[in-house]
Image 1 (cartoon, rainbow, N blue to C red):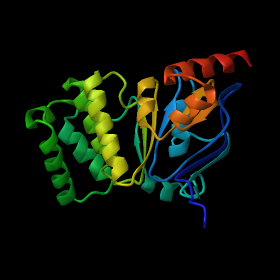
Image 2: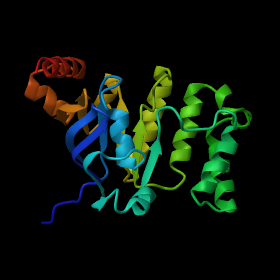
Image 3: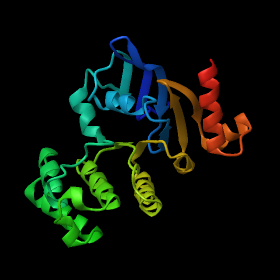
Image 4: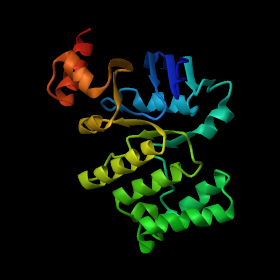
Length: 246
């Protein structure tokens, strides 16, 4: 039987800013159709890694393959397969939700008819009055919902979400993860970065990164058994502490 090509394959990936090495020869795979949680404290290297995967940040050394395609040599093809929701800049704050959808949908090549259908679909999920407010004035949970909707406009196979639930309340986080599960059921592949450890339980696999290095990786239940830990929080803290002592 032929091996399945990983949706994302990262090999010996390095990112240096002058003498500072933000990402240090990390390697991992994300299988098609799975949810992988990318865990780590702020400054661990999560966003830097995701930006290299998307091609937004130049790779110092190593390689990223998207469905077998090198993202440096085949960037145009790779971008068509990726959806990216950034931690900070996802939407224009002075535009309304509908204006953001129209703008990003146009960039994605959606036809006027498709854009109209997209805006009507969004209106079924969020109150019409809220959609006409500037994004900076809507609640964080709605803002994240619109950001994810915009991310999905190009109909990507692989979705990278960078701290998507940062700053939202627990109920909004739960609803957002319902959206993530729905995408998985559609066959999408998702890499989700977070520092909310309870979200690790929602993932098929987790990768824990600290100071630019992977310190643990695997299925949550398997990692707990291997390390003889009772919770992801305990596993996370011990992995970070042990790495700091090395």
